[in-house]
Amino acid sequence: MRCTIEGPTGEPFSDAWTLSIVGAHGASETRELSANNPECSVELAAGRWSLSPRTSTLAGRVVTIDVANATLRPVELRWRLEPTGSLQGTMWTSTHAALKGLPVTLVSLEDGRRMPRNTRGDGSFEFEGLRDGSYALHYGDPASAVLAVRRIDFHGPRQILEASVAPPLQELSVRVTDEAGGSVPEALVAGTGSRGGSIRGHTDADGVIRATFLPMGRYRIVASKLAIGRGELDVVVGDEQPVVVDVLIRQ
Image (cartoon, rainbow, N blue to C red; front, top):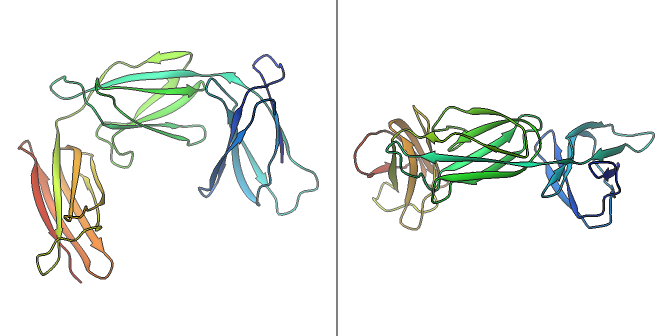
């Protein structure tokens, strides 16, 4: 496959740029192209691929192509880059204090591209390099968000969202133990809440994982480690101080 890019008004493009290549089954690659190199050649395996070029301030629309096992002639793509902009927002706690460190993820509804961020110390977040289009904004883990997913129809160059307020959020420490009462480091722990929020990761050297930004509600926690076993626990996260719960794993 051969591709060529040009500037917003059709002028030859001379800056450095990147080409994003995403396969239908999750394979992805970002190819870095140097300045004064507006053309590239890419070999793709058979299948469906989505491609798009971008710089820090410009981007090209996503093009999806089907590559056959054998092609009679090379596929040729040409993009005219378009200006991009920024999307800004702010997250507050239920007591209207700045909410720091909350994961927020913007997902393009056109090509599925995910852009993860964490809120800053003042509760703000920003996504840059956005083309005009439709996006979904997830607060917290996209698989179990703490607020309803927010659809955004973005129009550059800059868009500022009204502040969002999170529900009361708590912390929970999960300690994983074996049948002898010993701590289990590197155990896989996962759980989702009845009102959003997620617990996901591995225990530390003391067999503990600390989960944050959990809405109040019931959680089913599952812990496991090969050669030791698996365990489950139902726990209710309420409006109390952070607590520690124990999950016993066994064969």
